[in-house]
Structure formats: structure tokens, C-alpha cells
Image (tube, rainbow, N blue to C red):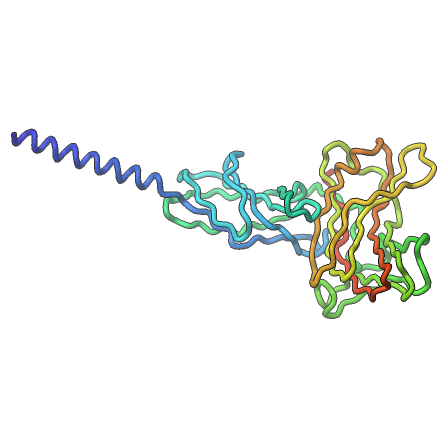
Length: 291
């Protein structure tokens, strides 16, 4: 009887330890991303301003989750691993299509996660080293990649540089689109066509910081080989804002739908039938792709 009692106690002790072990194993570790940083080279990449809305977190190629910033993600495994974080954007400004931005280098950190512990990561994102900027307009240097489309230009239409409190970064230039009192249609057009944009499914994006009281139409003119005149195509319409906003407009499907050798000239258009006073400011207008 005494031996049976000892065996019963021993079995209970072992079972309790196993339960504790299982309980500890079921407690997740946590990855906390309170914010992210974006580092750009001002001379050729623009200001370090972003609109990354979420993070895509993975471990050794295995997706762990996508979550809005600030992000708190429970993770079941507790061994050391390389944690990779991608910056997420709204594709072409659409809330219903979120993607990791393919032109930004993922952030990777080697770490050991502990059950019940919250590990904080503030990833620093930057463009891939092979990123190309065939259009880069920050309004801070002499000259411009854009001009007013002569088909619509009226006397008094122009573009100014401002660096007061209306600018994206006060003290640095932003562009202001100025419409004459009788202008109903205004279009800022790329001065020179782009002829060698990568086709297929290669990522190509148009980025733009903007602050506007009128809707903006973003699109392009294209000329395929053998075509005598340019054809216009609209991509997306941007709604008026009450402050500065940023958009990442995907171009790869537009480019892939055209024949090889097609030239493109991108534009920003305004239609103002009610002749409202325009308050439109732009900055960091760029076309980006990977070489």
C-alpha cells in the first residue's frame, strides 16, 4: 500500500510538470512594432516621408502575419530566428488592396523570442540599392521634369515654388499649381517621354506627396511603335484632402498592356468646372523601378 501511494504521488508530480511545460509552451512571445522609419537619400530619392500602413512579418520565408502599425503580433515559436519585416502600402491609394511595397528593402533582425515577453522592433526601411528614378521632382533644384500642357494652358496658369507653412517641409520647396480665374482644365505634364520602363510584372510605381482642395487625375500619354500621335489614359483619381497625403500608384499593369518600345509621359490633371480657387501643392513626385 505504501509503495502504491508513493508511485501515485510520483505520477502526479510528473503529470503536473508536463502540464506546466505544456502551459509554458502555449504562451506566445510577442513582436511589437510601434512605428517604422524610412530613410531616403535627399539628393536623388526625396524626403524621408512615407505612408507605410502595415507591416508584413515573416520568419525564414514563413509568413507570420500582416498587421497595421502600431503592430503587436503573438508568435508561438520561441527559438532564435531571422525575423523579416516588409513595409506595407495601399496600392494606388486603395484601402481594399494592401501589398508589401516591392521597391523597399525588407528589414531583417536576428532575435530570440521568449514566451510571455514583448520584443520591440522599429524597422528602418530604404529603397533597394538598384532602384532607379527616371523622374524625380522635389522642386528644390533649378529646372523641372514637368511643364504645363500647352493644349490646356491659359494666361495666368503656372507652377510656383513655396517653402512657407504650406510646404510639405517648411523651409524646403514644394510646388504650387496656380490656375487662372477662367481655367477649367489644367494639366502638369512630364517634359520628356520615358522609353525604357521595364515591362512584364516588374514593379514600377509613381509616388506623390500632395495637398489639394480639388480632385486630381493621375494618368499618362503613350505612343506605341508606329503610332503617329499620343493617346491619353487615366489611372486613378485622388480626392481632395485637408492636409498632406502620400500615394503609391502601381504602373506595371499599365506598362505591360502596351507594346514593347512604347513611350510614356505621365501627367497630373485638374478639372475645375466651377472655377473654384485652387489650393494644390505637390512634392516628391517620382517614378521608381528596379534595374
